[in-house]
Length: 129
Image (cartoon, rainbow, N blue to C red; front, side):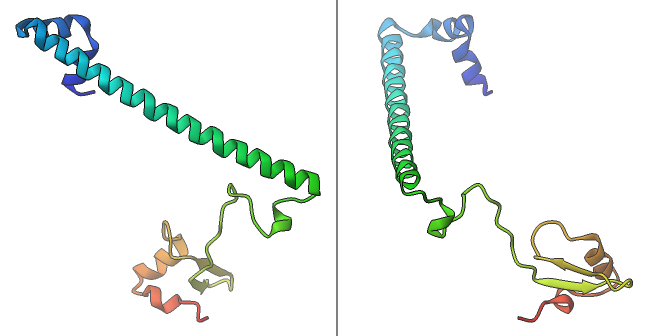
């Protein structure tokens, strides 16, 4: 938390900081803060209204699907919460004949890193499509 915010949130600190301000200046600060508050409340209300409208549309679509006896999969779609897999881009066969595949994303698998440490390059393991 910044020092400024810390002072705003503590009444005694705020009183001390406003000690040199005139009544008119304090009223201006209060007015500005009221405007900021109103803007924030309006933005949050708009966001809630958007979410409520989306939920209504989703509920309506789900009800129509249920009435028709359909599922999302019947439409050729997938649930948005499902994790998508990435096709492997690299493949190597270890000394035991076991294949290892890697998409090239994320942390390098140990078997690949061991080969890289011995001088191999990623391109040596590219899967030819």
